[in-house]
Length: 324
Image 1 (cartoon, rainbow, N blue to C red):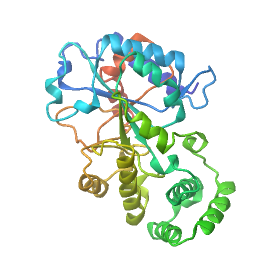
Image 2: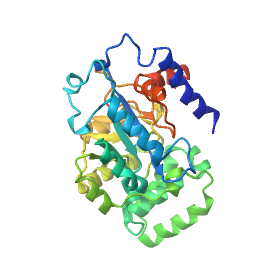
Image 3: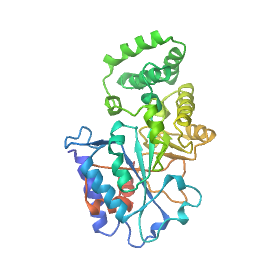
Image 4: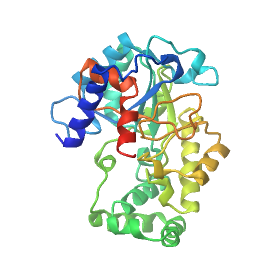
């Protein structure tokens, strides 16, 4: 276990013990915390400690939240949200990134504890590889998994994107096969099995699931040229409509502060997106920028004080101390 994960665990516990998370003098109806899951596992071997949760730990976490917290239904997220929060109980909104197949395999626990979630989907990686958008998304994902490509100028990246748009399916397949062995920094999402469009359509019928966009190929949006950015946003909206998702919601891939900017936020507004989520651990208040909403990443750990601290702004303090 990395030192970073150990520090995150015990920072929350310590602040809770000291009465600083939640702050004993603070009205809980003035803010809420959004938490972020990624992957789930049925065994004790965790491949990605900062992203993956064991099923048994997940159940303990969900049971605790259901019993001790006010759970926010994203279908009710709107201008009157803060009138529904409780002054004596922390409030939590649940989100899950990447549409991994393990969510479907563990959704029964969310049903058991009646916990609604927003599932953020990188649609291009959920499409079949033999579709044009699916193949382009895999190529673009692989492009950024070659470290030196991140150093290319926006003009060079635009040239690469333009070459894909005009390429035949045969040439796209050749480009993809050429990129695969050259990848030297493979993202965890590329090793996962994601839900199909058909599976997402079925899941979207469940009242506990709200589907939002997480782009097409899961790039750092602030590092792609405008034409590529427009494709990521507008094409993912098309597939969001196909799976009956909610156009109000978006999650930035990676989600650190520099992953968005004013230009991206303007484009999101024009597409009808009202709530966009980062992965910075800021809590959400009436003054929050609705296109830069914070989330706390969940760890494979169960401790009541840790969870109370998490829901009480501990990780907002943690991020500020680290200047994140």
